[in-house]
Length: 222
Image (cartoon, rainbow, N blue to C red; front, side):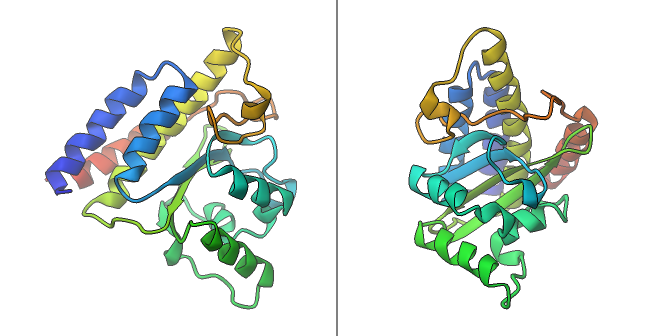
């Protein structure tokens, strides 16, 4: 895609994601956009400290059922070098930009197995909340279609998708819409995980979103 096409599609996505009426709508919209860049799987999740594990913190799960179950059963979150790097930066990053300690056998195991499940390349977007809580939109696929302004475009889309996913999931619960057992477990289908269990609820930082959107818009626009 050309720079102009990416710019138009990014802002078109933002308009459509802001109008999403359900968590399923958010999933469908984000999945379609990410496929254009070669990403087949994604996850929107809160990021607790590594020793607490990821169980109960996923917001929107677009990982394959097989990889999600493997990741949770083996507690890969505690050793995941991409998760660790998310805790150390506020900038989005491609997975191959992270230096993985070659002496850390558990970290190497995570990266080897994620590759075996078809996620050979990936990109992650850390997102800070108003209370300092950390979330992440992470995505992967067999082969990325690297394109001009890709990093900036996905950064913007991830910020808005995260905000809308939180809002729509919370709204669904308040309206009496209860997730199914399949959804509560965070597996594929409607792709719904769980909101935070620490009582913070839907706490987002509008200034953070606005600041990053303005910065990203400056990068996108000529």
